[in-house]
Length: 179
Image (cartoon, rainbow, N blue to C red):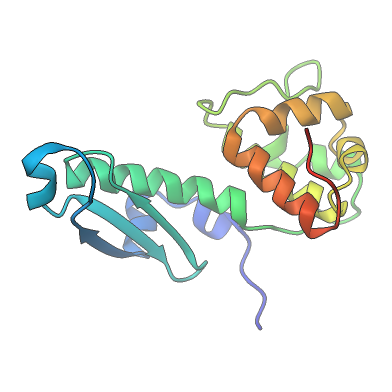
């Protein structure tokens, strides 16, 4: 299997550029929402063939709003599910210099981002890359990221999907889930 291009190949694209690469399906969502929901094809499914990612959005009665929500989910999925290798040297300095990670650290060197911060998801990608490279050993990943183990665990806990992916990675390497 040929090597996959780096995550930045897709994560740096505009929403329109990313959507242009997707197969877009619309369909009628089931469930509550009144008569209009059952009569219009407002739900959106995006398939991104280059990465194999699939996301859906069906919360709104507006196809336009659902398409925008699905595009945001696809962008987040790039950071959650695509792993890149670590910078050459695998040193804390090399990781700290990574542009997606350097912008995420505060003046004290800690990770203090909310999921609404635009720097959050790119930082998640780097943190999960490091966790995978350290075979899901949290203490080793924290050392490589230049943060405390507690700060790393708190950062992973910021978003339920990030927490779930971290625990999936740990399970893949035979470790217990983080509590």
